[in-house]
View 1: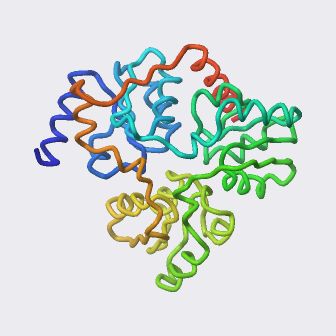
View 2 (view 1 turned 120 degrees about the horizontal axis):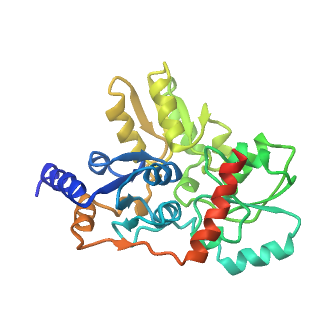
Length: 304
């Protein structure tokens, strides 16, 4: 089948199954075009929870599908390609986190949303890249253990200096590939361009940016800005998406190495086969894990 034929069949099956298709911003553009919602992981899960869909297809990675199931326990949630994982989400085990909590009992454990549902059960509050500063500032305790992303944690620390934030290890392997040398090279090639980066990048890179924020924040900044050229310091699919959204502007990747293979593994055919019932994996969470993880998310919503 052609791309168009796949898309038409997916749209037909979506109506037939009463399905909602969630597409993370890092997915390919052919998948974007069949989406009900496009965005960052937590926002997508919130969107799905508000629908009357019976079935949710999360085109992203496993922790995102788990989050959708946490917020929509009565819906059937599927990950179209079962091998789509997130290395950062898997950097801590539950036992390791419990040991850290025992070592630092006076700290509030703040978990980036990019964690497994099981790990969230042992955390106090979740954050997203767009809400991290606000939530950490609102946490009553001045002592924080931030997991797993040290880069995002360091970025939060800069903006919330009144908090004592402990960082252990961890980060996004994709964003960690970006270097200061990449910035210098890109600025030599495109001296008029604004540099927009995700705070999962190394702190030395983020410090050089004209704007640092979530993926949707980067896209909104570029779309609304009067500037005409942008260097994009996040997953390179965003360059393509912005080129479609703003054909009168120019977008350049900060690094050719900033590619998430876990995101790229999902194809339009995977979405099609999942809707046909011949592919994908249904996400099933034990109720104690789902409820424990939801408590962590609910605290994020309570704090702001």
